[in-house]
Length: 234
Image (cartoon, rainbow, N blue to C red):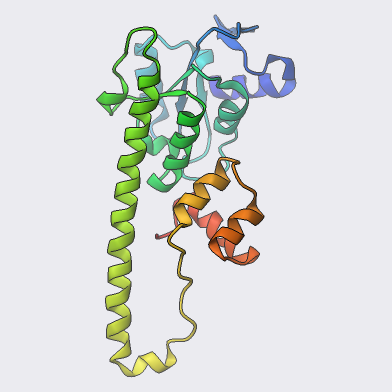
């Protein structure tokens, strides 16, 4: 598939990194040239590609990963993100779920905003609106609005889960089972999401993140794995 062709080409030809795909071959890209790339996961890949082609996407611009989007090892996406996309470029996806759960999508959007990479989400009309040249900073503002919405949803879910946990513990305390309850589950620090976002975006080291959250190394990496896969209930 086109995504695998692109990925393998970059691996075998490192000098082609951060280049522009034109008409089935890769040519050197001007620093000032803004490029558009399309990313699809394996959920209804054909449907996503059909939408991209209707927008004028060439096969070489479409990157595909042969794994489910919620898994942390999306090699083609990671290569697109870290080696190809440049400030001023545009990344187009069909929905936020392509980037994983809301916990996984949030740091990806933060990365794009901080690197001035525009993200267009086909099922989010606010992200699809184009602005005149010279107003490109508005795209970062739009991305930030999506990030803030995800942050609100995550925090509301965090409050709801903690409330349910407290109710469950209080109920358990009133029963004879409390004596056999065993070791309590790990309580996440209040700054967990903020610190994890900084760590995932390379702004702080793992050791610094552990110190800020007061977590031991084993616990930190255990929780980090669940967080990146979207399986950590916060």
